[in-house]
Image 1 (spheres, helix red, strand yellow):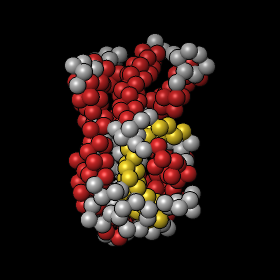
Image 2: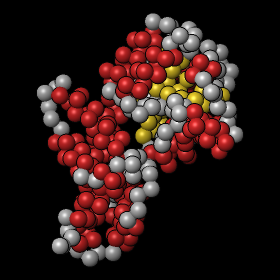
Image 3: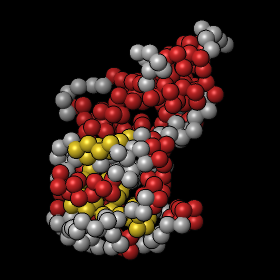
Length: 292
């Protein structure tokens, strides 16, 4: 692939995919977009002015790099299967979905038979990071392929880390999601406790943000808890799905992950909050201190 300015077509305009594609468009790195539900594609083109493809075949043939961001493992494999007849040798697929490492390796094996490159490249930073081009990218795959697409991926975020072979990007994302479960548990429970103690939460969050307990989650999600509003950064339902991946990975080591299991159970008690930000866990924690 030549060293000229590399462009990409984006597949999947969900909660994360939409702002990621919009960021690429502003960076003049986007050829166009495709979404399984065409009305979503039309909405994106109307909102941004970017090109939208009516058919998958048109989208696949439109760019040297194809970036995918879909919801689940089966969605990824089904999409790749549909793309296979149109893919050309030398194209590169960058998958920004969050799936199991084994699914990434299966996708890679299928594409390798067509001489199509593949990188698993899950991201972290929520919708805010996606919209600002401030995501963190965990990459697994051929480092030479990463070198080729790195200038393109830098439009999505400055922190791009190569972690090994295909699947290792997804393994790193699983670590991130497990750690996030613990942070969410700690911040939401501690702030509910603080509220029950009558502490002024805005002042407390400011104080904590300068001490040993400071964290990105406290600073960016704590004020939303205080206001009892949970604008979407990352869906609770998607985090629950990712924790299932973590548990399946741990089972290969004959190990259970109590933190993942507890967090999933807590999310299940908030079905009406499934499509809100995961920080809505505070609703459950606050209820622990409420008297009948």
